[in-house]
Image 1 (tube, rainbow, N blue to C red):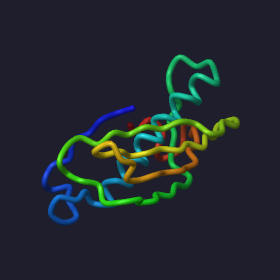
Image 2: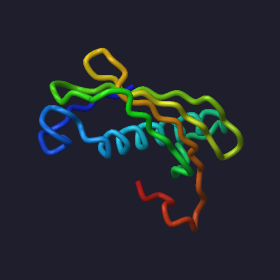
Image 3: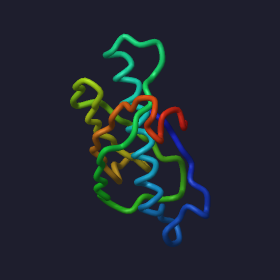
Image 4: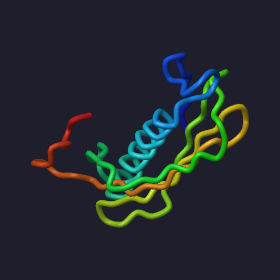
Length: 116
């Protein structure tokens, strides 16, 4: 779970959060959720470097800019170096966006290895 408060430059139009920002928030939150759960499943002491293989965002309703948004994510499948994660973005007590994605742990030599 995480909370994030948008600034004026994050809006699509007055009072509504931009859909691209919503996608970035859910992608990042789900990616970290994948890294954490892959670490636990592998008994590792630190999270692996993970990248997004695919993700889809469903915008359920406009996301208001009037306060913080809440991000939640959970694993629905862990298999080897891959995790399928589902996430939600909630604002004002209502789910405004959903995400489902596949995230993969990468090894040394991959361009994203230890880039975050």
